[in-house]
Image (tube, rainbow, N blue to C red; front, side, top):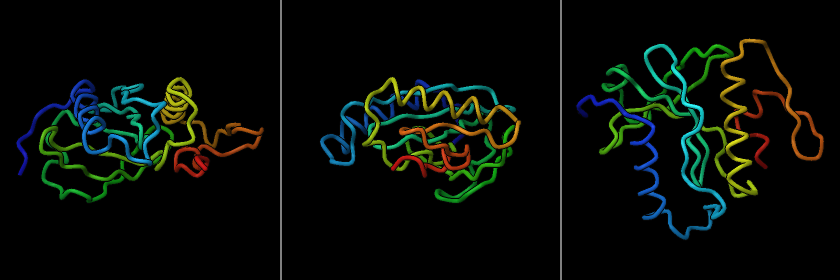
Length: 158
């Protein structure tokens, strides 16, 4: 069992930069226009919620401030109530970071044109998750309207 430690955004970014420079380096699923960045981390009860951008995915991350999930198995799921809606997170047990929760926003980020666009999308996701005002609509490339649910589930990534 992993001992409890408080994970900060700096720890998260450092760990994923190491992964990016190591086993993910040069893989075709990586977008070389993107870099690892933590965006919009905000207090959610005693935890911190934000978006992690990497060259190979964009995920919603919930960093614990206590041992809430430390006894849960890696890969288990937990539903978390956010101001705008409930979200299903996967428990991640990392040897270096400890336990945190992750929810997929975009399974692939190869189509993102640049870091600025990825950050703007991440900021919009956080804003929408903290806005408890029903289904907001967003405009995708080409003027196509997509719901927040589709945006958050990554359906608009293709």
